[in-house]
Image (cartoon, rainbow, N blue to C red; front, side, top):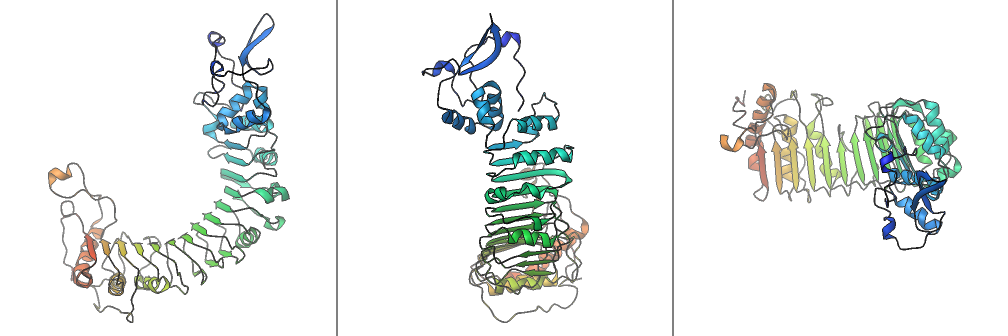
Length: 483
């Protein structure tokens, strides 16, 4: 960070100031140790040819360096501007978090590129373990970013984060053999990440997060195959991905999150230790491996499952109106009961603006049934946006019938949030339910009717049934359920 301007004339002779405003170093009055004339913080004032300043205690260099490294980056940079001893240790300061908040004060409007240039020119790159460059909302010339990465990404670095909002071609050459041996976390946003064949093994990489990154399925597969220590993989809006293949050599991979990536068609996992999975995608083929030990799941579009999740305990499925067609069969979700013998809680969101599925009141009222089965662990099943869709009623009926350990069934006929407190007008005060369309409201009442007719008397006495109906104070309309 650039040296601060000299203090005003009225402040130049103020005595006994602390070295850093953060309080990491005591005032000189409080330090009762011998000092050397060379250990002086220059105050920028002189009288009769003699420079005035504040004395600091004479301590071994490694102790001062340790103190310096414990300071926040902005305080450490200011200390380096005031002390030659700290300036030396600044050249190997281990963590650089360069963003608008750390580089600018409210009154400062200096050029961001110049500031980063000054910081990195005074840093040798040696000893740097964490580099975070947040350049979002700033137009930075790509040659500048190239230069900064060449200076700062050196052997010994452990974490690299580059956040942009413009497509930048990430130079794979900065990931030299020495860097690949030490880097543990890599996060890229709005980058073009090609030429994976140029990379060798990333021996220490445990976390990989790619957001809005241009990378193909073949390139990502190559990268993953070279990252044998990987534990955490996070993919967000990587639009060039059409398939994701996770090789069996990733023995430590326990966390996978894929959000967006709307061109993704196939996900194949062969990693045996996967325990946490979040998917907000639409895929035509999903294979997670027979030995997956999944404990949490969140997905947008769920096919029938050919695999087993022996340790899956908490299941969240969100099916939004944008991805749900009238031909989607809610009843197919019952396959999770067979696939997940350890399942304890299931949360299902099927909220829609317009329910276009076949209603239980619109055709045959015969409910599909599966052969007698018992699920021993499921304790809680909750549906947000419960409707009279025949497949959804069948799914709920089947779960209630087969879950012998069920303790609570919650069926919310609207969208979960936005209800008033209910009760009388004095209790409600100025609170009102969120407005909904007439179509949603009418379907909510049909959903209540379906619960009363097909579900309510099937719930065992040991389980609590919670039906969240439209608020009678805000939505007093009723409909003919059997029409």
